[in-house]
Length: 257
Image (cartoon, rainbow, N blue to C red):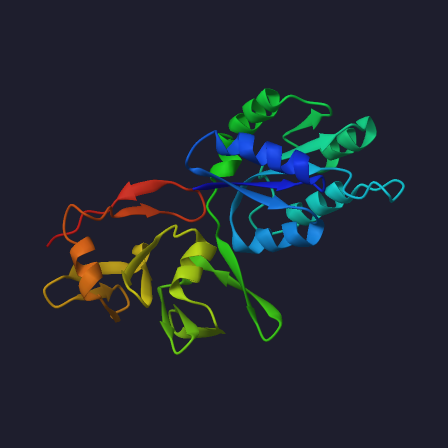
């Protein structure tokens, strides 16, 4: 699934563009934000493939360039240094600033046609930077934002309204996060769900024992497989395609059963 974030304060314009972008593919989901605060939340909840940002978000404020200020935050956020950004603008100077300093992919000059916008966003979705896998995810605990390196996560399990993230000898407890929310955070890249309350990092799987319903990890730990998920993990029904979180390269891991 690819996510396109549209930051536009004009509701009609935003909804019209969102509807047009949804027609690109069933694998494209549109996230809509009216202001910077809404857009900022999406940065941590999803892995955005393309940003479409209106430069002026508050017309009543002279000289407003809130869209550019948000783009600066995007570029300072882990994993978004080269993600395509498309600016929507009628101002020449801010657009040139965006090109020079924010590595803008392109910009849509108002007024623009929906056909033009869709064609540009489609190209941006196929840009190599839009395919990059997220290496770090952020979780909130006690009001503090904690960065978790997904490459180091061996498995995660939910217990008593708390998500326990295992990273070798380390454990991180995040309250009120479910397994479903964890997979949503990580876009499920590289993780295999083996029960309602547990997921494992495919890179750390040594073997899968279906008769006894457990996954053996390379560090010696075992993770139980739920009855329903055991059927899903039968040979031919699961794709053991491993993804390196940094460069997106894949390789087949053939298991002996």
